Length: 91
Length: 89
Image 1 (cartoon, rainbow over the protein chains, first blue to last red):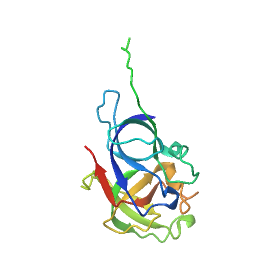
Image 2 (cartoon, rainbow over the protein chains, first blue to last red):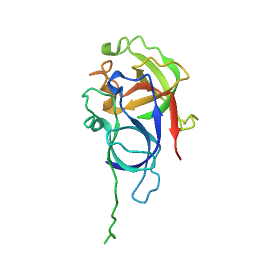
Image 3 (tube, rainbow over the protein chains, first blue to last red):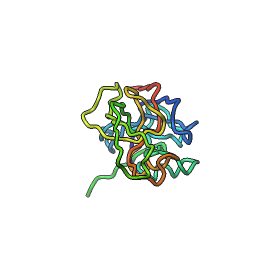
């Protein structure tokens, strides 16, 4: 799982029928210091996140697991909204 | 999923027999302002996208998770056509 920030929403009327009703968000993967790591991706939102929120997401085939339908082409899913990140000094 | 623009079509008569009937499109990943990135790849079209349209492409083993691509040799599938993006920052 990786950290990301929700930076936008996307509308797509024509899509695979398994995704009808799914909420999609544009997310920017970030590291623990909020630096960008790589390009934006589109993720299915199963956690109810809003723009600007810090979230964590799963990628690859595992991303279909939180989705209610088994056969859905999803390679990224938001699975949680981050409340707080605690970092400890490296020893 | 990533944003990409359909820039062409691939015709291939000789291919894996389970791919017969699949529409193969050349797509180029785009930025949020729809400007093209430098790479491109071929994806199976499951929604009927046309050249010039901005689409969502699902990559990796998840690309096999559609009725059209299930259990086939596919690692990229076009699974939505983008109407509008709303970017807040």
